[in-house]
Each structure stands twice: as structure tokens, then as C-alpha cells.
Amino acid sequence: MAMIKKILCAVDFSEHSPAVAKYASELAKGLGAQIVCMYVAPSLSQYVGFHVPPSSIENFVGEIVTGAEATMSAFLSENFQDVQAEGHVVTGYAAEEIFAIAAKENVDLIIMGTHGRKGIDRILFGSVAEKVVKGARCPVMTIRPQV
Image 1 (tube, helix red, strand yellow):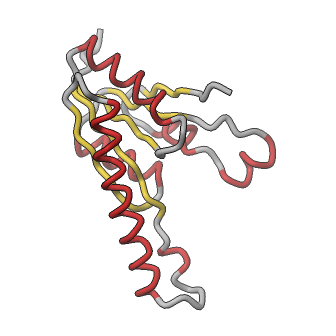
Image 2 (image 1 turned 180 degrees about the horizontal axis):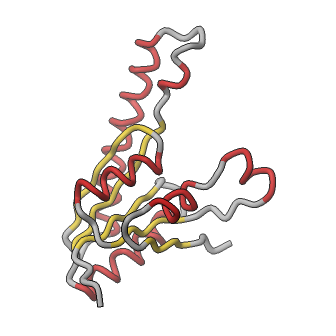
């Protein structure tokens, strides 16, 4: 059986994120693994061509990241009390950033939530979880929210 020593837990800080963290925490405890928890703030660079000054966009993204870093700190202390965990806040496109951190940290498993979108929502918004499952170089465990 493959050794799982490092788990990437990708969260979006929604109300479902603690459930995703619980799975990651329980697996880490049982396997003696460590957690790399990450949040990807959306990159607003795609809006630079609009009539919004780039400095305003950069300031806005900076505020999002600063807030997310504070949220990450609280999230780690609330959800990963009994395991070794570190947090990362990055900006960009979620799937690509998950791949980058997974490679950089040499993780053995990715755990993330899925919103379970269907129909037109899925067509319009796509599925980060689906992209990660299809493109990851390690196993991916998805947690569907309880509704």
C-alpha cells in the first residue's frame, strides 16, 4: 500500500470547509501524516483590461489575501488541533494552484470539497474538483457537502 505522509487539504472557507478538514484531520491522525491546508484567492488579473485601474485591482486582491491569511490561521487552530498542519494562501486559478502546491510540497493525497453543481451552474462555473481529479498526479478524495 502507498504511504501517505502528507495530505493537501484544499478549502474555500465556505460552511462546508470544516467537514473537508475533518476528513483530512482524521486521516492524518490515523496515518501519522501532516496536513498542508490551502486556500486559493481568485486572481483578478483577468479584469485588468476593463476600465478599472490595475492598482485598484492589486489593492483589492491584497485585501482579500490579508483577510484570507487571518481566516487561515483561525481555520488551522479550529480544525487541526491534534495534527501537524501548515496553511498557505495563494492567488490564481484554483486547480492550477492546487497542482503547484501539491508538486512543491510533494503531497501523497489531495482532499477537497465539491459543490455538487449540476446543469447550467456546472456549465457556467465548471468544476475545480473535476479538474483536480483529472489532472492530479496523486490520489484525490472529494467530499460532497451534506445538504
